[in-house]
Amino acid sequence: MNIILLGPPGAGKGTQARLLVERLGMIQLSTGDMLRAARRSGTEMGRRVADVMDKGHLVTDDIVIGLIRERLLQGDLGSGVIFDGFPRTLAQADALDDMLAREGLRLDHVVEMRVNDDEALVQRVSGRATCATCGEVYHDATKPIPDDGHCTKCSGTTFNRRGDDNADSMRTRLLAYYKETAPLVGYYYVKRLLRPVDGMGEIDQVAQEVEGILSASPLPGAAVRTA
Ligand code: ADP
Ligand code: ADP
Ligand code: ZN
Image 1: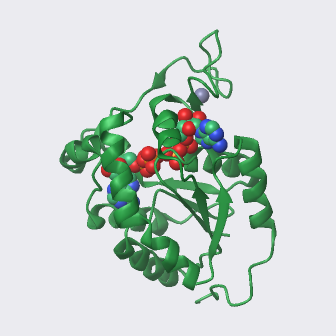
Image 2: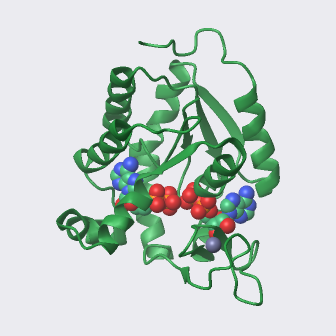
């Protein structure tokens, strides 16, 4: 089973992806995480994308498509792939179609995490912190790091905050979402793959909705295995 988590920055894609990895043994492919890893390791590409990311603009299609292609070619995809933060443009969506077809894979569901309240999204990313060791996602108000400073999942004590998780960059990221990424909602609707969930619910509630979708059989007319 291969799925896309689609939604604006702060919708909860990473949070839900981690739960699916834990519960169903799926693989999370986050282009945001891959790009941040490239920055940390100081590759030439990492240096090239740094400023674009900090300002909240989209990185070029070629770069993110290349990252996904490389990972898919490695194989070892567990019980399926969760595309988290990819595709973000129609060109990326077309490229993903081609890559999956070439590997004999299909897309089963595109889960659209709906959050129509931009203020809530800004509050979510402004309070976001991530465990540097295992990637567990926290929030200062709704899911705080325990008082003893240890990650609940791995006991790690180092937490990252993202340079782009500020109100200024969020304005640009939200604009990029509505301009470049929101058209994918119609694209996947027509392909009969779109499954909206209420992203404003509690984390567990959203998780239940997502699991309900994944356990239901594909709708008639959904994508057919291509190889
Ligand atoms: P995305 O990957 O879509 O940008 P994240 O999963 O990183 O979103 O979540 C952004 C922030 O919002 C995190 O701090 C996370 O703890 C918090 N969060 C995620 N889902 C919810 C939810 N359903 N309700 C409240 N806060 C949430
Ligand atoms: P969020 O969790 O807030 O949705 P991500 O971690 O997915 O953010 O992405 C962070 C940044 O990385 C984006 O603002 C953008 O600059 C870049 N990025 C990530 N994925 C893509 C993509 N598929 N296409 C273009 N840029 C991307
Ligand atoms: Zn941890």
